Length: 114
Length: 112
Image 1 (cartoon, one colour):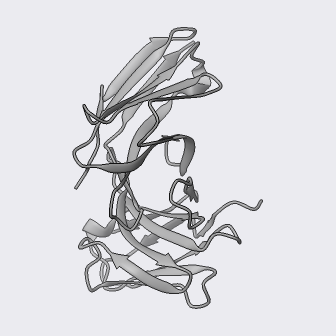
Image 2 (cartoon, chains in turn orange, red):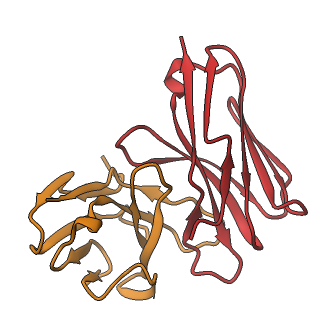
Image 3 (cartoon, each protein chain N blue to C red):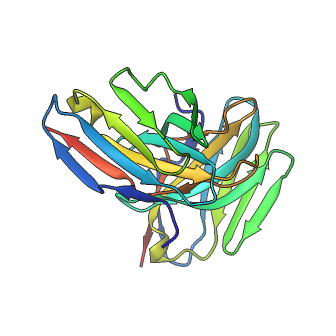
């Protein structure tokens, strides 16, 4: 399968713990995006990378959130000191650089903070 | 904040009928895209329409875009039970980092 891969698919954690999610984009895609989706809502943009450079962050991305894409390939999203409000589906997407191209999404990581 | 608003929020039809979903947005766009999401799964890209296009077809899908009214519609013809899913419109805003700005979606149920 050469699509966008996310791990883990599900994560249950206790409040206050740190969690890290991984995204492996489609190999030739140099743009990578992270979104968050809560129940009944559309995804909301968190941050994006052009190759290894993190070029934009949403104000939704508090200082407890950090994302990396060290070699311009896979990316990680870490949430420190998780709160119950962090419970959501975290989606990764990748695309080519051209303007009018589609984004391909992974299956998401569902985080539950108890 | 959500840029697009889909209408209706929920739609229930019989198999074989057509389904129409509408999307409105607020600011100038480069393109508008429609995605489908099955419950608890990732999003699947359906169709992209550029700001200088007015209509696009893909199989049983027809998308229109009216930039003067800042609105789009998605028509699914001859619906099937397997079309049951949430449908989202998403815009790429002019001058943005090309991230997608999603609406809150339409939940489509196709009854067999």
